Structures are given as C-alpha cells and as structure tokens.
Image 1 (spheres, rainbow, N blue to C red):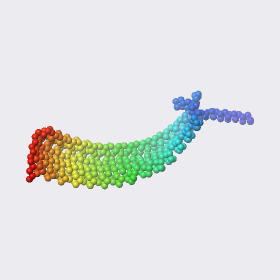
Image 2 (tube, one colour):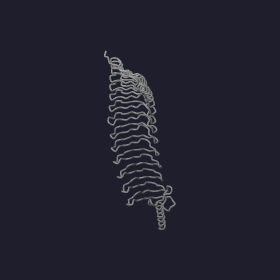
Image 3 (cartoon, rainbow, N blue to C red):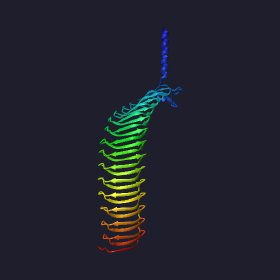
Image 4 (cartoon, helix red, strand yellow):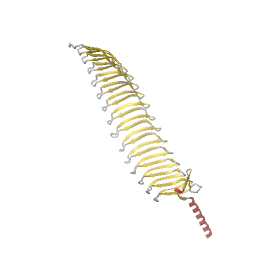
Length: 395
C-alpha cells in the first residue's frame, strides 16, 4: 500500500513539474521574434507561457501570456510611475475581448471590444473628468448603428448613425447647453436630403439646405434671428439655378435674380427698403447683357441703357427728377460712339456731340438755355480742327 502511494506521489509530482515547465515565465528580453512568432532564446519550439518585463526602476512594465508563440489571454501594461496604462486581450495572436486604456491619473480613457482581430461591439470613450465622451458600435471593424457623443459637462454633443461603416439617416448636433444646432441627413456616406441649422441664441431656424449625393440640390432657405426669411433659392447639381430671392429684415423683397447652371442669366430686379423698385439688371452667362434700368426712391427713372457681352452698347439715357431727358449717349463695345445729346432742365438742348472710339470726332454744338446757339466746334480723332463762338441773347 505504501509503495502504491509513493508511486502515485512521484507520478503526480512529475505531471506538476512537466506542466510547470510548459508554462514557463520569462522576461520579455528572453524572447526571440521569428516572422511574428515568439520563441524562448535557444528554443526551436514557439513559446507558450507567461512573460513579464520591468522598468529600470524595478517597477512592473507588463505581464501577459503566449500560446504557440502568439500573444494570448489577458495582458496588462503599466506606466513608469506605476499607474496602469492599458489592458489588452488576445486569442492566439488576434485581438479578442475587451481592451481598456487609462490616462496619466489612472482614469479610464477608452474601452473597446474585439472578436477574432476585428473591433466588434461597444466602444466607450471618456473625458478627463470621468464623464463619458463617446459611445460607439462596431461590427467587423466597421462603424454600425447609433453613435453618441457628449460634452465634458454631460450634455449631448452629437448623435450619428452608420450602416456597414457608412453614414446614414439623420444626424443631430447640439451646443454645450444641450440645444439643437443642426440636423444633417445622410445616405450611403453622403449628404442626401435636408440639412437644417438653428440659431444658438434663439433656437430658430437659420438655414435649410437640400442635398443629393453630397451635392447641393433643391431649395435652400435662410432666416434671420427673428425668424423672418432673408433669402431663398434652388440649386441644381451643385449650381444655383432658377429664381433666387433676398428679403430685408422687415420681410420685404429687395432682390430677385434668375440663375442658370451657376451663372446669372436673365433679369435681376432690386427694390429699396420701402419696396420701391430701384434697378433692373440683365445678364447672360454671368455677364451684363441686355437692358439695365435705374429708378430713384420716388419711383422716377434715373437712367437706362444696354450691355452686350459685359460692355455698354447702344443708347444710354439719363433723366432729371421730373422724368425729362438729361443726357443721351451712344456706345459701341463700352466706348462712346456716335451722337451724345445733353438737355437743360427746362427741356432746351444744351449740347450735341459726336464720338468715335471714345474720342471727340465730328461737329460739336452748344446752346444757351434760351435755345440760341452758343458755339460750334469740330474735332477729328480727339483733336479740335475748327470752332466758332456766338453771343448770348436773352429772349
């Protein structure tokens, strides 16, 4: 019986000794790396067992385990001052399980989970004061589902949504007081649908945008702090297109413009603060082209004239406050060309001039305000060649 017990004890001790030898405990520096696999120095067999490492001050640096030469199980790392730095988890070389990171004060910074080497499940991040800063979700390393961010005061900062790593659905953004700042809609990682922005002071809408596949498309509207509309217009494929309108603080329209493919095209009309029309402009492919007319605050026409390809062209007429003609000019490619006539306020003609390529050219006549001729001059390419002066006789 005693012999049996002795034999059993010897066998048990041998098994324990064998098991312990298989679970060696080595210093990190005693391991050799061969193509990503760890070996004990001098061994041809991938290392299985525990390892540790220390700082020069004898403080612990890390502890962990290997299996068949690969990191396995729980690992812990410390900073040189003795505070924990991070905790990791592996399954035969692959990240697997919960990972946790700490700041210099030992407070948790982040925790995340892995499965077979890929980030999967919930990831939490924290502010230095301990408040959670972010809650994320992953599936196979890709962002998935609802993500939430918080300010350090605990107020919500942002709510996001993902599907297979791409932005989807409506995202909400908040200020530090918890008030909604904006909402933006996404589809397949691109802005798609409405984006609405709110005033941080009043909470009222400031701007509403329309997007399609990350490009401006559809109606855009702007409001002031009082909630009054100040501008609206549409985009088509990222460019202004169609009618755009602007309004003053009282809600009255002060500008209306036609756009085509991102360029001013057609009429632009402007009004003053009292709602009186002040100017009509004409454009073609973003250049001045066509009739332009100006009015005074009293509604009387001030001047009118035409442009062609961005240059003054044809007749330009200027008016007195009572609507009578003050001056007539003719232009060709932005230069005075042909007849120029001026009138006195009483309707009498005061001057008649001729130009060529913006230079005086031809006969010039000047009249007194009683209609009698005052003088005559002749010019050729800007140089006077003749002249005659007459006396004034009052009728």
